Amino acid sequence: MKKIIPLALTLLFGALTCPAQDDGSLRSRLSRDTILIGDQIEWTLDLSLAPGEQAMISKPGESPVPGVESLSEMELDTLARKNGTMDLRGRIILTSFDSGSYDLPPLYVLKAHADGTVDTLAYAGPRLEVTTIPIDTATFQPYDIKGQIRYPVTFREVLPWIGLALLFAAAIWAFIRWIRFRRQNRDFFGKPVVKDPPHIVALRSLEKTRSQKLWQAGKQKQFYTQVTDALRQYIADRYEVSALEQTSAEMFRDLEDKDIDPALREKMKDLFTTADFVKFAKHTATDQENENAIPTAIRFVNETYVQQLEKEEEE
View 1 (cartoon, rainbow, N blue to C red):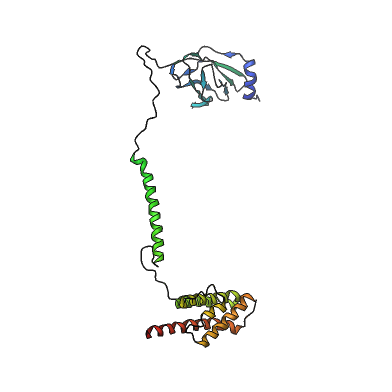
View 2 (tube, rainbow, N blue to C red):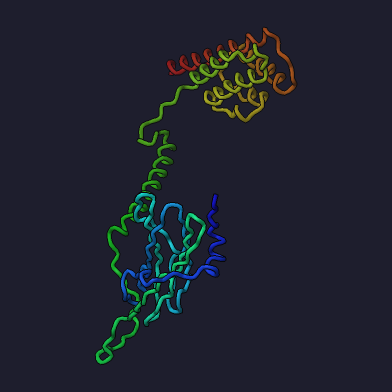
């Protein structure tokens, strides 16, 4: 079986061994004969390949002739297919920045046939005319270079900046409003923020701790921390002392002049003493102490709240 010569080797040796065929009908074409300086133009050639044939077109390079430049590589487009025959068109984009008349060089096509033979086809190059815009030197008058033209600013150009400024102003206004109303214990819309009374907050927190069953799971430190924190917050809100920042001894010293039942105060001291031992001395409280912790805390909250109501009614 005959083997077709690879096109890469054909390009290297075919042009040396096969004479170029040119019967005068092989001509490349320009999309137009004349262009102005800087314009672009297409340089094309047409080629037909029978079944089993292959072709390669020589590259004219970046500058086919001095004064003319290539703006693209040679590209092949398929124009038609019929009964295995392909009609191809090669095209390349040219330009020139110098006026004059340029004879473009021939384009060579290496065609490999199915039987292994190779033909070199030479497409005659056309003539390219590059012209400039004619100037009437009799009436032509040169002028200085004009300065930069300043166009008026349109509303469309200013609109995004206006929107950004309004958004920034709205953000500042909202922040100032939020700060002012927060100091007045109101929300952003000016409505008073209704806070739950201290005893409700404390009872809710204690009930949540009870439902978590922490000490039953061996988490005594977390259990006593949550119980005493709820009580400290209640004492701070109810009696206006710094219970959250004080030690247990300091807190009870400040509570000595408060109207609290002495027996109830002693039970609270026992509760905080047990909690301090568990939290800081790694003490393990008994089940009885654990079971009594939340009921003792709830009793303290309820009795001091009832006492406050009675005092308010007397007043």
